[in-house]
Structure formats: structure tokens, C-alpha cells
Length: 157
Image (cartoon, rainbow, N blue to C red):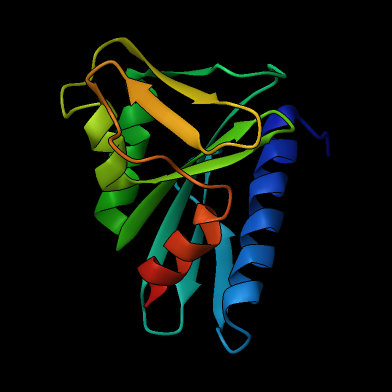
């Protein structure tokens, strides 16, 4: 079986998620499954809650990072939102880190109208947090490097 970039970057998200969740809770039981497309995976918690993780990545080494969302990507995220209790959209910024947005936060920067192609831009100054903006707005608060684990725990609780 061949290994492609999508596999590598999903692996990074998966590993970081596991490590951050384990730091927050040692008694959490969950199951990992394939998602609704090659761009996602599911985390099923013990309280019958399911979190969909959608992965976007870039190989660009420095800020600002830009992520395109064609209509198909946004439709995939919508499908996840229908079958999961929560959807988290992760942006792997090359080797710098992972930015994690909830579905609600994504809708602050990309609204419900799916254009043929839209962009999300992420900036980070040295040793700072991540700032996210998109075609339809910008987030008021910054995102930290440890938000992935926290948002998974909140979604499974």
C-alpha cells in the first residue's frame, strides 16, 4: 500500500490528538474509525458521542499559510456535521503546528454559502498564537497550539 501526503498529515493530527487528550485525561475510552472521506476520521467516545476530524494541510514552511476549500470540501464537512455530534477542522501548518477550529468557528470565517473555491488564511508571529481569517470573516480570538486536545475533550464530554 502506497503512502501519500494525506496519510502523513492525518497521522500527525492523529498523534497530536492522542498525546494532548492523554495529557488531559487518563481514563477516557474512545475508538478511532475512518471518516466520511479520505480527508477525515472519527473519534467515538464512551458516552455515544462522535467527533469528526477533518484534516487540511500545507507544505509551506512559514506563515501566512493558506488553505483552499473547494465546494466539495465544504460539502464533506457538512456530511460530517450531520453524522457527528461535533466536527473539528484541523489545519496542519507544515512543521509549525496544528490549528483546530470547531464547526461553529469555521462558520465565522466561511459562511453557509459554498462558493466554487474559498480560502482560509492562518498567520502566526514567532512564539505567538494563530490568527485565522477567511473569505467571510475573521476570528476575534486567537487559537493556541494545544486547542486540539481541549476541543476533542469538550466534544466528547
